Amino acid sequence: MTEAAQSRQQQTSDETVRTPLAKPSPTRRGGGDPGVRGRTTIADGVVEKIAGLAARDVVGVHAMGGGLSRTLGAVRDRVPGGTKSSVTRGVKAEVGEVQTALDLEIVVEYGVSISDVARAVRENVVTAVERMTGLEVVEVNIAVSDVKLPDEEEEEPETRIQ
Image 1: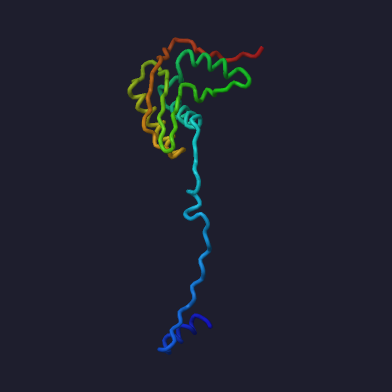
Image 2: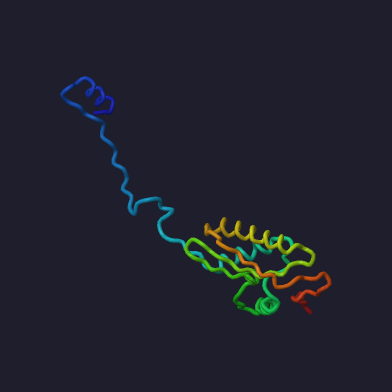
């Protein structure tokens, strides 16, 4: 019997009331939205890379890390199989389940306002980390370890091929 016929029978007969049968809904296993099943973990190094790149994008940031870490990093970058990337130099992240805290060590260019550079670094880092990871950035601590003077030579000279 079609739905229209069932409806007509329902209207004409006081004794027999029939309603259309509902289609069974597909059985969902696990319940809820599939996109939220399970857990996502983000390694400290992932957040450090994002923060390092975001900090370097700010005008007035000359380099990341202190003098010794930059020197050791330059050597480590040239050694095959070096472990830590220059992108994460000067960045330390502590990542929890929903929040993260960051410590950055930067070298600023001479003549720029350190407070303005620090504010811009914080804004850029928080925006990038929260957008890419979904973690809440609770703090970004910035240590200015040096000022790059205009007449100073670069500590990491270019590699010359002879």
